[in-house]
Amino acid sequence: MSSCFWLGIESSCDDTACAVLEERNDSIKILSNCLYSQIDEHKAWGGVVPELASRAHLEKIVPVLEQALEEAKIKIEDINKIAYTKSPGLMGSLLVGISFAKGLAKDLGIECYEINHLEGHVCSALIHSPLSITHSPLIALIVSGGHTELVLIKPGFEYVSVGRTRDDAAGEAFDKSGKILGLGYPAGVEISRLARNGNRNFYEFPRALKDDSFEFSFSGFKTAVSRYVQVKGEEFVKEHIADICASLQEAIVDILSLKTVNAAKKMGVDTVLLCGGVSANYRLRELLDERCKAAGLRLIYPELSLCTDNGAMIAAAGILVTRVFF
Ligand code: KG4
Ligand code: ZN
Image 1: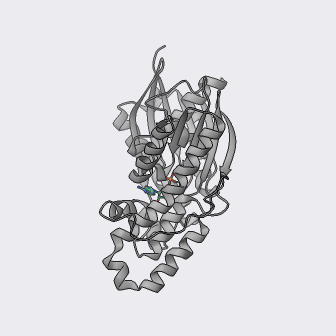
Image 2: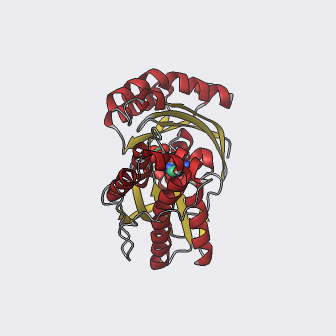
Image 3: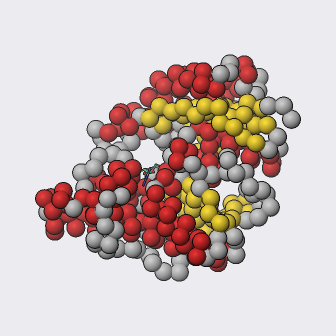
């Protein structure tokens, strides 16, 4: 097979992302993976403002595409296929990427494929080890700022939801707790950075729904953090910030990893796939790895640069999913 060059476009939330991937036989090579992060646009508001996000996508999508082509050392005419995020996400943001992808594909006279954002996250873990997903089922834990879900993936990318959060996503639990602790937005990375020097047994934050179900609940978590801060006072929090971050991180990753391993055992699969922005968390990787090993399960996850939203995961989903369906 000669090379096929894929352009991946992601604009579902607050990252404007384009990537070029080369597909050749069974291998997938990332030639470029470029991104404009809108964090500075939204920081002052403490969260993503949808109207600002779509405007920023409009402004940045062409420069990000140009950068992705330049880094990949190819011209736009060399692109053979386009994959873009169709949903879920912020409607205004998605529309920028969708319209751009469709217009570009029409102009170039090439095929374009709509991709589910969560399927993109799943495929981010398969880029460098496209294990024959078509042959054995696996359990995926998709953990991001908007989603927390356990999914059974059957051969041929057939998805069966096993359980999900009843309220907040795990990423939201990190971000909202961080906001209460005065750590800015989004706080997931900062919490995990501070937690590295902290004692995870400093305080036992509540683990909701620690039972046999595969549902999660994180909405009470921010209330618990907020109450803790009120009771202990700002000075104490400042002084023990590393220990507090390590403790709250432990509460979140404990419940995530416990339920994931239980789901894998119940479904009788031998592989667990971890993906989504929160999969960048070192302690989640470590604890899940420990528990998977103890249960005789194989664990796969994306490399760090592919955990949070990016264009490469969307192009990878285009490559892997079209192999099955087209
Ligand atoms: O997948 P993603 O980029 O966007 C969504 O699809 O939501 O995930 C973003 C989320 C944010 O909540 C962010 O705080 C969280 O992933 N995150 C982390 C870490 N890196 C990103 N949470 C915990 N630890 C991290 N190292
Ligand atoms: Zn995402």
